[in-house]
Image 1 (cartoon, rainbow, N blue to C red):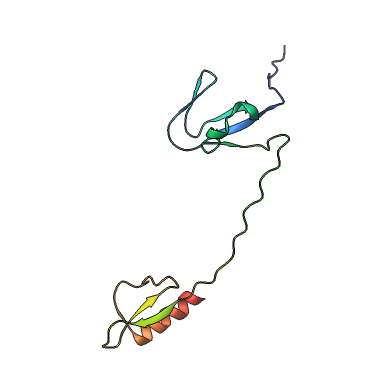
Image 2 (tube, helix red, strand yellow):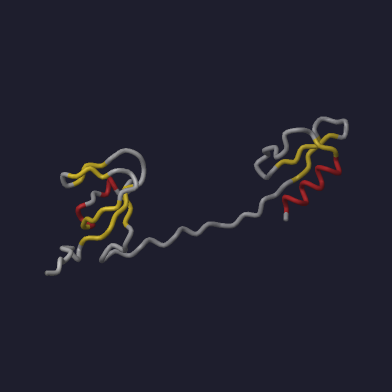
Length: 114
């Protein structure tokens, strides 16, 4: 006698992400656990902690967002005199912790710009 797996074709696999547990259909779903459920059984409010592992039937998968690639810009900026410099990014944040001499700061700018 063969055992057959009773799987509904409408059910897809889901994975619980995030912390805490989720009570669903009389079961406790722990973080990282994979379970089967229909897409209409999972409320939209839980979609941030439960992600589908398969494509949802009748729904297109969202296109990945397009991001602009911004080249980082680094410059050597004098630190109040005495020949000491800071390397700063486009936002004005210092990259180095200690002050650098001009040659060392220029070398760091060239290395970071590669």
